[in-house]
Length: 196
Image 1 (cartoon, rainbow, N blue to C red):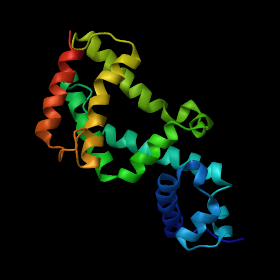
Image 2 (image 1 turned 90 degrees about the vertical axis):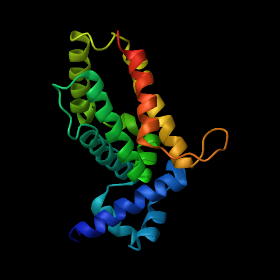
Image 3 (image 1 turned 180 degrees about the horizontal axis):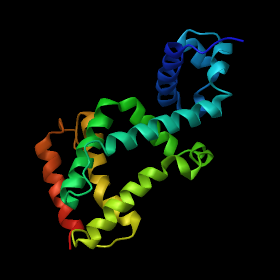
Image 4 (image 1 turned 45 degrees about the vertical axis):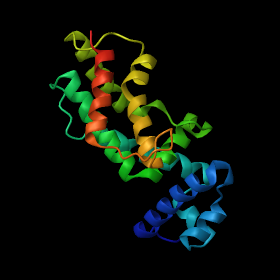
């Protein structure tokens, strides 16, 4: 029986993310991955049972990393505005510094593979957000909204700015660079829509 090689496994995971983003889930194959990682196809099965297992493992890994990054430096005693701003900065930094992982998680969230995960994997993230939002409502810093409305108002503008930054231009084709000033201007409008 062959032993696991951590460096080789990390290389395989990195190449898998790249290929999954480039080829899509349907175009991706274990054979293509083996070729891209310069390993034998048999090596892949030391680390993963099959393609589905690989994709689900990567979904868990990237999703948990985003959770950790989102709440880095987060203070539950801070005001709603300060806490949400911290999340904006953390999320933007992660997505801009990790475009492949961010593109992968978007694909994953919109795929049937997401249903393969049990709720327990992201329950801590949900609990942390629920705690943060409940506290903000109790303190009168946030209007009560359905979760879908809150998420749309609170985060869609940030991700649109990030898309412009990744494209390098806005919807009119003009050059665009995401600055903290632009992000803060957008955030201030979002906060106005969420405060009582």
